[in-house]
Amino acid sequence: MKLTHEKKKCFKRYFDDVGVMRQVNIEFANFSNGMEGFVGVDSLRDKGKMNAKLWWIVHGAHAPTPRNITLKVLGQPCSSSCYEKNTYSFIHSLKINNKMTSKRVDSICP
Image 1 (cartoon, rainbow, N blue to C red):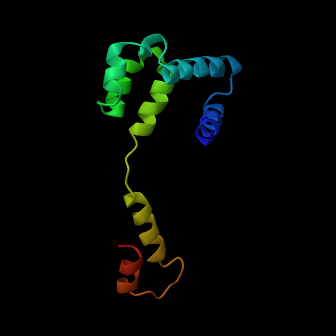
Image 2: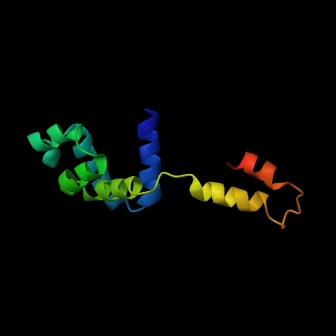
């Protein structure tokens, strides 16, 4: 139930046109219920075996809007390096006029 609510919130942010939103909901329903282009043996067989990004590239033609969103999400790097870099530079900057030693900063931002 929570996942459905979050999906709706996400779609509302992306699509403010009622007609487009209706089409996206239809595409997502087809995917969720294994209808239209998602009913084939290939897509069902590959669902648990392929990398999610590759699966959407191969089988997502019948739901182009959810496919594009999914590919954007799956294409994002999973790393905290940007966060760590920003945190380190904030802690170890003259802007906040701190007197932290390098050892203390390294213990906070490994």
